[in-house]
Length: 248
Image (cartoon, rainbow, N blue to C red; front, side, top):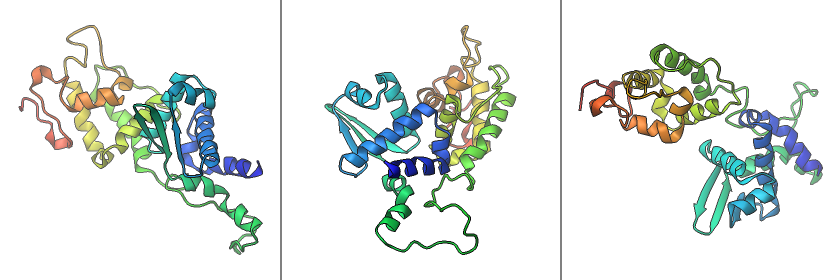
């Protein structure tokens, strides 16, 4: 059990893991442990959602929500087939190798240590989302929210977007879906498009879009495809310069 405890503590060096809720952390690590005990390949197969939920100790709705978030953030691949649910843990060996040095030491192999400062903690295997590395998508979150508040004045203002919140996770996923979305000008054009929509701004019926509604996957794609454009006369594809009011 000491090995799993070591992996658990080292996992807090991973920025994505740290920003999960306590519940999501528990579910994700249960998947790691289950995969280790079932072939050590990072692949798990279950027949039903209810059966999987029972194993994870959560209800079906919570289990599905957590796994779909892991899938959207590309930390697992979730496949639902007619008679099975398949989970493939992305970068599975990274999570196992958090404890790699300890295993090498137990096998009598030499582990290279830094001579610069022997008091430094043992180094873990590098990962693209460690806190010391810049993440362009995360850096863009607050500027995007500021532009939304500035450009979509008919919609409710976003006052807070906490790192562990659902709205933060949804926005981060939308940013990472397309490299063009790493440019703030892309979002400016999107928000101008939304601001020009009479339907989304509550001028057609007694309802207005909210930021949370906009960044949900199923609504986001409909906006891009022009479902809410005024009279179907506005066009927006995948670039900030592709939005031209009145063009069809």
